[in-house]
Image 1 (cartoon, rainbow over the protein chains, first blue to last red):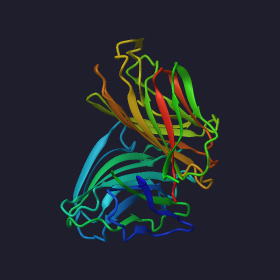
Image 2: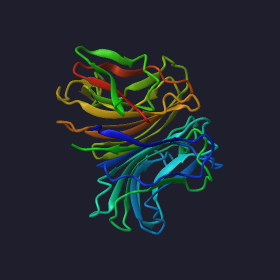
Image 3: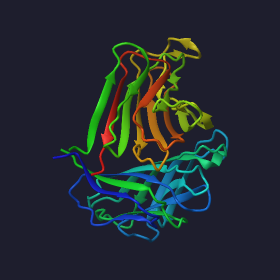
Image 4: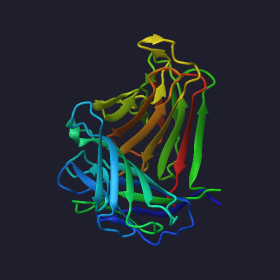
Length: 179
Length: 179
């Protein structure tokens, strides 16, 4: 049996408000998502939001290690509880370097078990050719969905202001199988 | 067809100034390079560079954050460069400018993601995570990101060492399919 299986691959042929995958099979051991994203928000960045199983209440927690150049030579940490989504830090916005998309990858280990809250480990990079320091950021994010311990069957990504992901943004969701 | 495939592996039987993957097929969605390496740079951490399609010029940018021993540090953004620098991607071969002092068996590990490398509608962006725990003082963990401000499809990748890659370093290029 293959270790990696493509569950979904989406390349937006036009602007789209969000990416969503529903009905995710519980037949894998882990989920791995790879995304190349840009928002049409009229500034240099937008906030990337991840929601699971359609939960929109204050059921998410996250913490991150990050740098964004906004203060010289600083690596910072931030944590939030009771959020409406996992803030996977920031992706590229409309006024940033043209044709440039942010990279986002995340793992959801043991996503189909029903005994534990689900953890997300994410990695985000927004690169730029601009000399303005805060036009870039990098982040390692730990996220938690604590509404319940149900298996993950739905994932959704949103640019929180956008309103849209731009054309050519891509999202690939893989299922990872163990032995 | 497997979802993730090894395209090429280079194992260095002798020191080499650079490693190049050329004629990369455009049949994958994403690329990933996994590295175990050490270079001749006379410090504990080396700072290799990436160059795409043999293009130098001024189209590259670099950003990074690192933990060096007990010190956190974010590099200032570098733009208009001739390559993307990946700070602290490899173990070096010396201390404070003098060769020697780092155990010869200490090699660093790195994973480099290059998303949507064949998409001619977007620039090429890179995310790298690297780390080495050393038998001497000065371990490091680093996240780097880079931009190649060019929408050309990527067909070759050159990893240039600041100094030489040392014997025993190994580089594997993987392709990730999306269907």
